[in-house]
Length: 82
Image (cartoon, rainbow, N blue to C red; front, side):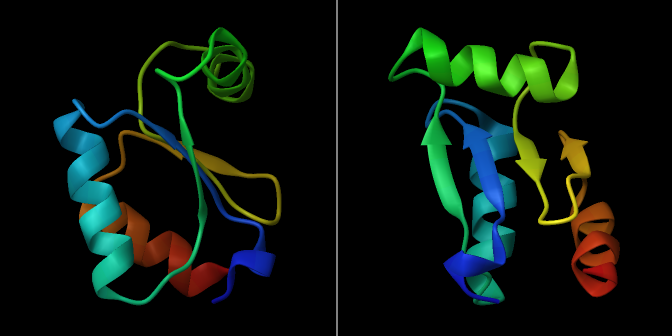
């Protein structure tokens, strides 16, 4: 998958689930646009508007669906479906 695939990853460097999900995606060569919710309130608001809750990571897929705090298994299943 390339960045043009449209995957957007909302997260923060301090977040353990974010680091795990990033490592999972990176180890499989999945490209995505990373949006650090700590950089701006707008970024945090975007993530919240997608998921309806403050939890991160929020990973948005090209079809408009998203996952919040996904397990590696959930990410694997979602990537296989897109």
